[in-house]
Image (cartoon, rainbow, N blue to C red; front, top):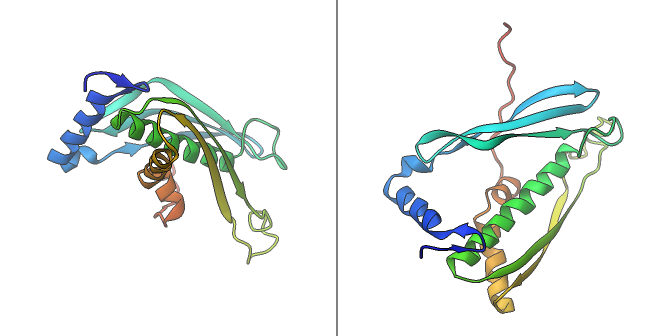
Length: 183
């Protein structure tokens, strides 16, 4: 297959899969984000450099994102929790699109709505027994593609099954928080 399907370069996708099958070291990726405090509860992250497929790379441009908290902040941006919802929806959407491309299914539209519930008494330290994170996350997808409902369900299941973000939210992930040495 030498064409793009749904904007997915299939040769590149299948070529990457073949290379990773041959050399597992190529599958080792590292992503990073640099963050700086703005004021109050606001901060700005920039994302530019990444490592994967055996080398260091940069995005086409540096991307910046502001985050803030609605009750304590000044409106500098969405909450970090909302970024998690965006990341989950974007990751599963990419999986649906690439899964459809791999099956040569034309997609016309993929849309979703991600919602999550959180009791902020835990975050605010009001009740130590209340979890600080989401109690649940729901994402509903609408897929318009040239296939039947069973195939759409299979695309959605595959999008979730191979989503790194879904895996990170559904399974424990080791997270280490440290302080940089004083300069």
